[in-house]
Amino acid sequence: MDIGGNERLMRKTAKEFDIVLQEWLDEHTMKRVSGQVKGDEDFMYVMLSLLDDNAELLPDRDSDSVIKATCLYVLYKRFRYFIQTLTAFAGSNFSCCRNLNSNIDVILKETMRLYPAAPLLLPHEATEECTELCKLQPERFLTTHNDVDVRGQNFELIPFGSGRRICSGISFTLQVMQLILASLLHGFDFATPSNEPVVMEEAKSFAYAKAAPLEVLLTPRLSAFLYDY
Image 1 (cartoon, helix red, strand yellow):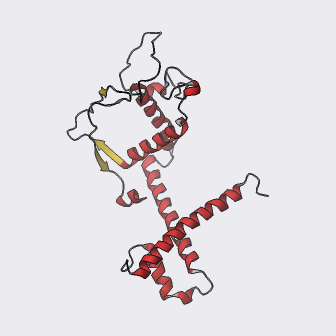
Image 2: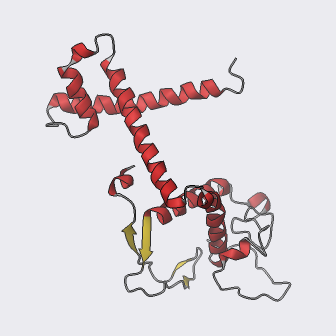
């Protein structure tokens, strides 16, 4: 009866995968027939050559379906290998992975507290004595301010605004920022060209921007093939 619509979603996903794979296959076939490609430059060209030369091995099978299924399986194996690499990096018990989202979340909160995107909200006035205002201290959101959110409910931190004028893209923005930051931290080591601290002074304008351009050296820390996917 497909209660919950899971089978329907699986069929829809399978159809989308098939459309993408068919586009790849059509592109490879066209280039191969037109002579734009010489030899077997990737796995799909290898499969096309093998089935052209040994069509009798699969008399009852559609060659396109065989190629697409095989390529999809290879992609799945590569994905499994990537997950194993990530597991080795994070720890076999995934304790780091469970804490990864909260750690990235507090870093983003502290960044938005120190450097809001724009100075256009209403002025704020402190009602109590404040300390360490300009110090980067993300752990504050794991201890003394762990209940503070950025979705407009806690007026101590409202980088996206609050009420009816709150940014409509807040949920998408937070997810994308977490994904980008996690990917960069996982994939690269960071350093400045002269090992000097990054200048964080702001240029005064309608939107806060850095007064000095950011210069960073990125050093890949994973196997080269992992950056192709």
